[in-house]
Length: 398
Ligand code: ADP
Image 1: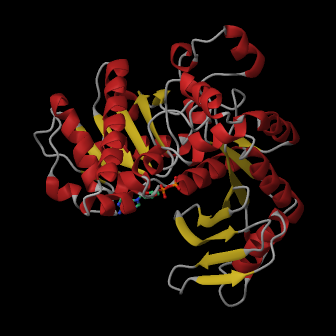
Image 2: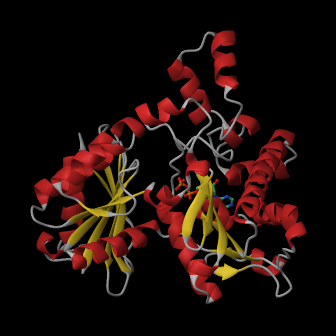
């Protein structure tokens, strides 16, 4: 089965065409600057990367351009659009309605629309992607894979906030958690590497990228995670503050006369390691600045690692133990120094990093020594593959 995986953002769109039998990526790419002008970056294994300047006033010409690239006589990988057997969409928010992926029907689409209020920036773009595919590929099954679904197993005590209960009932204000597809994927891969059934394991997965979240996976299900009602909560991130005293925005609004949107912008776009370091949101820039003696860069990196370690500690407590810890995503997969600092905090758990293995990159592997009482892994995440797998399973079960 050839499955087109789409991740539609408001101004960009990532795609992969995956052969679900071999799980090989046949082609992948990115449409950027949708609504501005338009650029398509297209990659086919074994060929040079291609870039095309196009006109993308909205998502329709962008998805059409993806289909044109995939079916192009010279650099395409399929002959015609009819070879696409199914489309899998990453959908940001499924609220409490979706506990797993779903074949898109009219009712499912309506339910995704009802969640717009919870993800006003993301769900509309996801919906646009679904509707354009319905137009361009009528009759081809489409599946929605939700970032929130994996965390719907959290117990009430983990997802409720201690605010008047009526706000949960009225507006659905609770912890939802995000990056679910990634946490689920790396937890399963971890169990595979350990050669143990996931149902018998306590795993803490750390998705550390520009956005970052940590998840407690007990017996294969999410029982707690660090992101909350929105992806702003939890550990400090590239530009997001993570958890702070809820009075801080109120204080800032009073002191500086800031509007709601201004505070929203500060907490989402100007905070995190960017705000702390004043250097960049990219950890590579901050690590370079630290090497040059920038003390605020050091504070930013230390704060980040401290918050990661602290959250892992919380989840060890809530799961009453831990068998394995997984690092994934841009920073988790690539920054040995960050993993080292986090694991130094966790020596009390009997964790012993193998510094040579911790310096390697690019493959799924254990990075602890044989003596380590808890195994630590680096596992590259692959959300697109998870989306393709769910899509295949649901389409075959139809
Ligand atoms: P997202 O998908 O959330 O945009 P990624 O998972 O791609 O983010 O992670 C991007 C981040 O990973 C970058 O901002 C950068 O800080 C970090 N990163 C990537 N490679 C390295 C590296 N070699 N060393 C340190 N940090 C890295």
